[in-house]
Image (cartoon, rainbow, N blue to C red):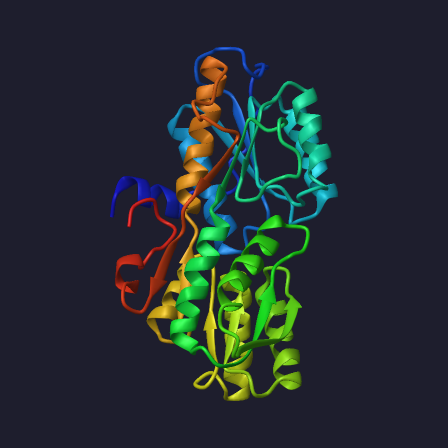
Length: 320
């Protein structure tokens, strides 16, 4: 195991430090507090996001504080206030809400602290110095194409949807539709919002299964909802006849692919863009520029199936 992988596994989310006052865009040597705000570290995707970003910040000579908004814009706003009070030199933010997080970003910008968004976008450009996200449309197309191979081109299916406040949910769902609509004998007979959550995915799957007992497949906006759906299908004794596809590439999902319970997962390169966001923050603090050509930057996803799953035993690590 490499030193970097050991660091990522053992990193604590509780590293808190107070930095000396520094001003965004003012060239200076590395140092100071980088505040990292993720959604919910109980989800391994967001846990990895925070751990990787903090590790890279420390490697570059900064201190790091990881906090979680739990998708609550009020909590997010308070965390931004704390970052300002603690004189953070930069903020790495996974926004809680595409529209609702704009105000929090504006507060940081007004305090002359550069903000770098990861994983999700906000509905206003020109505020954050960078928005680094997975290419969700590309990933959704990959997943849907594999889903058809696994499920077939005829029958009824349902969809588990992510949080409506996150643009990624609509992008993935639209990406699925763009592929699956090419198969007229595939009918989406139901869908439910499960907010990226495993327990909600379980409950939604129970409800959908009761309403549509004849389905042949489930396509999900993320792995946690898919895993919840799988648990519900197991409980109903129907997992062998109903196939499920996921999205994220979480370690648990990779294990489920290997076990044959999940047909595939689409790996988001969360470790890659989390590191890149910190590197761009460092570049900006030292030179006034991120080094990127555009504010919005897309990172392509990778399909993980039973055929290649052994290469991805720890899917959120930097190197595969």
